[in-house]
Length: 462
Image (cartoon, rainbow, N blue to C red; front, side, top):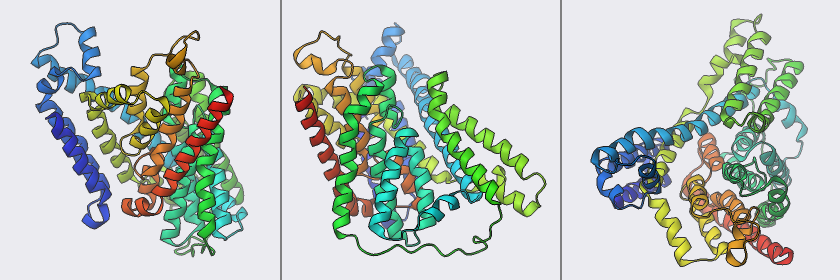
């Protein structure tokens, strides 16, 4: 059963990769493997947990003596682990849902028109650099997921051709993941390391920003050597060219939307509550404001601009895809598969640079959050007096900083390797195989370039 969970995960992953040839939506495949892996885990729970490889189970038994029996194992899986992981997954889903709705509100109020009207260039290379640099710094202030949703919404207004949109959206994923890696609030994994005390704000910014910048710039330079021509702006149809909101309304909603997104990290820092609550608070404020703003308008405009109508446009399949894939990974984490992987790396590699590089590559296949969680569990934070190999694990040590870089940027190598990639894939229906052919090598080159910069930087500074 333990091995069967991996087989099902691999088969489901393959179905997601072959979404277009199979003509089966990736959300359906993700939901199936999310349920099947947990089902197999339940039926084989006694055998799986008896091996002792599950760190979660060992910790549970330590806190609940006398539960190491068949009934206790079943109770652990169904009442402890499923609910525990569901709580973590739901925070991401509600965050995603809130961010997508806020962006859709701004879009329906033609707020992005203010920005797109300022971007005059249609030259592909210039536009790619502008959007990538904008994404890089926005991702550090917001986070890579929210930034990707915002910029992909912008790209829809700037580029008509589907394949061009795919390419630009994919490069935005690279820039968003690179921008999130050097900020303590830019990516879920850096947030984990920041809250856990492994890294501090100033050090993660100053030591990881340069490698992250190279991760974005090197692929951009390569693309600039062969990309030619101009993009075509979309033709507005079905009344889309009609200005059904005033300029004042557009500016107000755009500013309110940006403020709502920027408020999330502030809310998290001040209250220590999960970021999704800050996102839902911003959505609630925008909902109230738009209701008041349009209360005297005709029913036709109300149905188009009220949040109840806008919610119907939110991409629910993307949310369900997240639910399925994260559930599947959670089952592997709970059963102990990821702990085995982490232990194998520690026992057989024993080099902080190679371990982190491998974790980065694996994070493009398996969600980076459980991988980082496994690393945090395996390696305690050493005291400042630590010497030799152990000195890499002190607060702001080389291992933790390089882990933040690798786990944050490695996911760019596959479209479903990061939250930003999954969001872009869902919004633009980007084909997995197309991304593999066109973007993965660029992402790998950028990843290795940034890693090389970090290594040289570490050698010079230490």
